Length: 269
Image 1 (cartoon, rainbow, N blue to C red):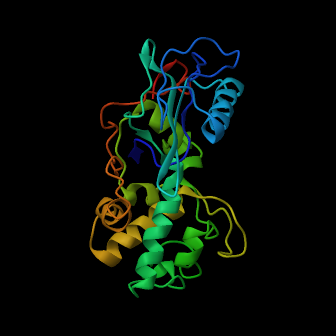
Image 2 (image 1 turned 45 degrees about the vertical axis):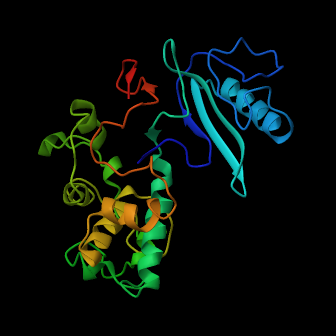
Image 3 (image 1 turned 30 degrees about the horizontal axis):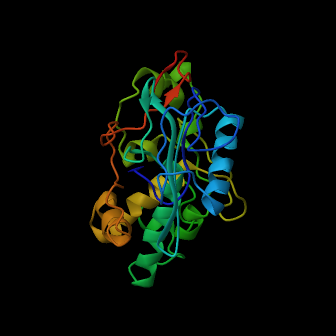
């Protein structure tokens, strides 16, 4: 997912400058900031929100924050703090990934299809994946509630004897590889991974596999690609014109850059 702002705090985990937006705090001098609804020093609720953002940026060592808040369609505060790249100020026009909201969006699509009678939360997963282990005991509701217990392809261990790398190693070697839903689901079962538990519905443990499988089911039910469903059923209705779904690694320009040392070197992620 990529968006400019969705009305909540957008954060990239980079560590450079702390900055304000006409703030009277003791923070270092601002490099770039945008404030709304006025271009002067924020007051009232806007000032309180800005103070919280500045404190969070310092406390968590964040390089940049993009924030937007409205109440009953009235703008309260729109601000970009910090830098996207060294000497490149962050801007509220920049796009960034919002992956952790993807599950909620997928759930909204699912529930709309339930309301239309296209699918039932009690439908067994085996209806679409008859050969998947324990799929006859798991339901669509369990996939969405992280209680199906299917193996999580992300955490599958390496098996040198079978020449199987871990999923993490695979991503390190090929960071731009595009996986299909079929490939990810296959990597969630033997010999790549084992079930997290064998009694679907009897426990809870987050699994990336469940949401990939649910997306594949929604595509089978509607005959449409998931990105098209998301646009039709959520993004267009909410006028989220700067939000979209993409399986490619690129992000729509202008981009709010993020950096990580996850692969052993500090690089643009």
